[in-house]
Length: 157
Image (tube, rainbow, N blue to C red; front, side, top):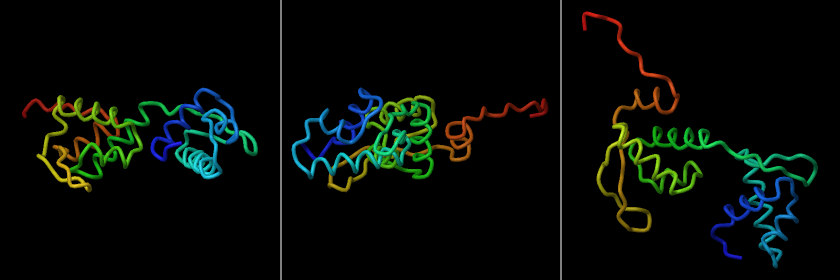
């Protein structure tokens, strides 16, 4: 079993099984070594902390699908906190799928809430696109908190 992608594989197996134990996930993923079984247990505990998996009984868990609005909210919060960021940074901070983060960035650029801030160097020395939140207060109120913008009723403006 590869070290990369274990979370996605455990998440997918949990989604298929609905109610399961770590041994069930292990047999579903065809785990062969103790080290891999330990990685599965650690991943299950991590998913419990994020709320994607809940404990139903001792050693038995249930997969609870995270709604996309909760994931979107987490992504937008991470964007607001960072201010200037890359898609990779937001993916790491929010634990969302990279393609979903890029989709949200494209939507927010199209709506005028984000803008390209140029190119920056990643931790591996490669160039990556950087983005900037255009108006922090408005972004926080409308995108992160989901409040509608106030329309001025003052006729003298």
